[in-house]
Image (cartoon, rainbow, N blue to C red; front, side):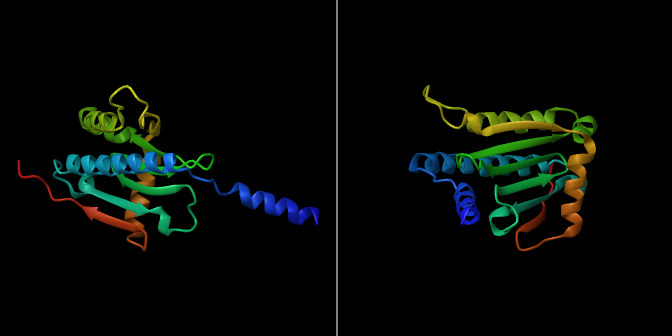
Length: 170
C-alpha cells in the first residue's frame, strides 16, 4: 500500500497546473520564439553555401520522448529552443551560439540575431514582460555542429523538418 501511495504522489508531480496568466505569457514567449526563428532564417539568406543556409526545425510536442521541449530551430550558426519549465510551466527561449560560426564569420551575424531577440523580449511600459524568458548560451564548436549535422543526416521525420533557404540576390 505504501508503494502505491508513493507512486501516485510521484505521478502528480510530473504535471504542473498552468494558470491563465502563465498561459498568456507563454503565448507571448512562443510568438517571440517564432519571430526570432523568422529573423534567423532571414539572416541565413546572405550565404552562398547551402550548408550555411540549411536549418532543421523540430516540433517536440509531437515526440513523446521530449517532455520539456516544445520547439527547436538549429542551423550551422545557432540553436534556438523553446522549452517549458517542469517547475512552473513557463516557457523559456534558449539561444545557443556556436564557437566555430563566430570564429569563421565574426560576431556581426550573431549580433544582428541577438539584437532582434532582445528587442522581442524587451518589456515596454515599465511592466515585467517576457524578459525572463531569454537565455543565451555559448557552446564549444563540436557541440552545436554535431547536433546540427546529426539532424540533417538523419533527415526529416514526423517532427523534424529540414529546409534550405534561397540565397538573397545581392
